[in-house]
Length: 412
Image 1: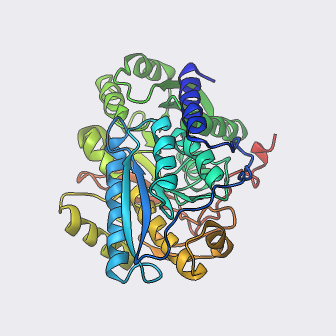
Image 2 (image 1 turned 135 degrees about the vertical axis):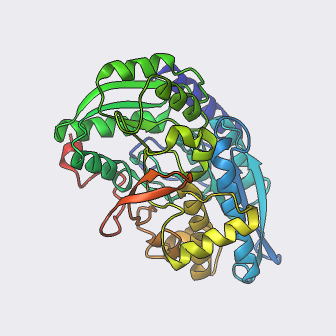
Image 3 (image 1 turned 45 degrees about the vertical axis):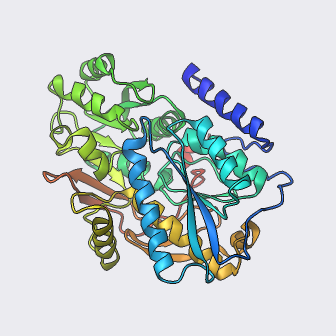
């Protein structure tokens, strides 16, 4: 484990301990919640409170502000339709400030002081893992909207973004069809990139790929000179990019300055959506690949309605993206679960959640027993308008397999 990750995990753990949470979940091993504190959620008033915790400042704000907007849109639409169980939703918002320890502290505040019925947010896996023991100790619910590395399940988290077999593995399968087998791995130095790259290397070894380089930079890094030079010298045919946040700006600028481009060394990114294209710069991303389960260009009645509503609320120049769509779906899924359960209590919602369906902008999604949802993987290319066009689509929705139990190359 790198020093950077150790410091992040230590800070997060200290925050959790200081807040009074005692249950800790180890990667790959779902943890049972400890004796949870009595819920303080007020179900007798005419309103019900939910929490938002998103990075509205710091290196991740480039991505997470738009998630906040999508969550707000979903709440406003639900309230306009009458609310949940006859109650209007009231939002209590907190800034995670791109720091895992802050996410844990804010989650504890939302649960114990603000008495919210559920929390929506988080982006980095470090933020999620810092919050996980807080939600388990308090037996509360977190709806996490971003694609991630898998190898986790908790009865207190619903994962509405893609897991590994719904994003990363389809991207590798796509590269295989393009005969691009010399790959270079570049990522931010925290949980998701390092774990995802372990999975990528296991896939690569079983499928004839050669990993010609693997490099990491701290979140928020603006110096990619050394990494870009190593990339150019490696002979890579393609780059798998797990850099998060505004560090992508610096990476792609340096990448382009060395004469690398989408034709001679294409990049396939796992954390760059339409919103980030504008932030990074279209001149650096045009023609580059992305792997997601939703694009603004998806053609469906539900998506046309979603895009129109978002632009009406936030401006005609704003774009929609996968994580924000997954966060929009998350709020709606929670409302459907509470309605079916006729309750806002965690255990009641968990008892009815399996099989809940929502016609999302990406297509119909279904909640599985492992608290992940079915999704339809897409590979896209950034076009000249800053949107992403689908160049490959899974023939059918993919059932989430967060622990990769269906893949022989991972079993050992």
